[in-house]
Length: 428
Image 1 (cartoon, rainbow, N blue to C red):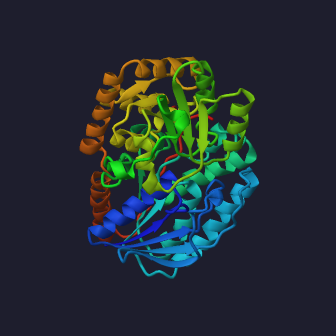
Image 2 (image 1 turned 30 degrees about the vertical axis):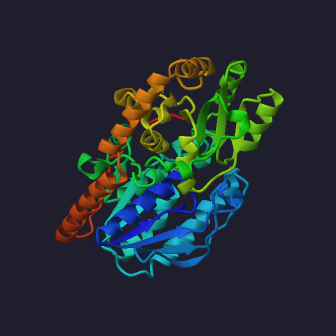
Image 3 (image 1 turned 90 degrees about the vertical axis):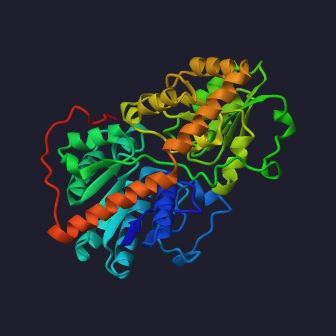
């Protein structure tokens, strides 16, 4: 099977969509499939600050397993909507054009956000190949939730129209949660074309690191209960809540460590300085291979999203890595993420945007090391048994194989989309 994957972000970038695309490309190629990835040079505003993020335009073989074709695009550290729109638009054009000369694939996979899906549409019709959209982030609703787009503004309304038109072009859509599937069904997509395959974690990378590879704590963190956050410091995460919790815990042996970059990092650092938070430390972005050792140096790991109906139906991909790391999870997210943590008994779930509840949860873990160990082991076991990336890739491979076989029998088929009001569409 020849698979063409579109993704705007790809390693060395550490964005969740890039990790999903890499996992698919590597897993499918190891299974004997011919995989080509069309992507861009590192382009997220946070990525442009990372000295370790280097990649050039052109072809890039990945250890002989699959091909990576990088295209040029407009890049800017400015995260304002106009600049981001230029980045997305230029990638759409470059990726679409480059894909028309890679040879006919049996199936095309586009990993969200929505502009990446648009980039795949010309190849879908040029090669008359089925298109599978991997839905990691519901656009444009998520952009409106964090204020990047004005809800019900002209740009938001236009993107909503394009969103629905794009879904009609897809042979199948794969969401990462049941809530995503309900959202798509609410738009009128037929259930036989909507699937759920959650994210997973690479057990080889996130196995417990050897003692010689572990990160040593700085002197200021020795003897403290370290709450670690690793990932994007963006607008959706609402990390100001964590800083408010740090203020409530200033007189206790607790420290918050934020590892990564993002559009909200400078504001958060300024806020920490303004309040004199000597128990909040910000570190720069690191390569994904260094993340397991950093997690090992923490006592608990923090996952956060702001309070919004849209985020109740998502599950941040980092939570599976947190589980595999064997550390208790402090979950300041509602909906399906909180349910996952509760069902796996791998952490403490509190209401989003509630610093008092978060501080109290930290105190509870601080005072009960035995409970921390039990919660961590529960998470590790669930990650191994249910959420390994190998298992997710196997599910994907089976699905793609079925789609290719069906396509060979029926030819190019469009989904029948019946527009109708939906009670499950998240509001910004």
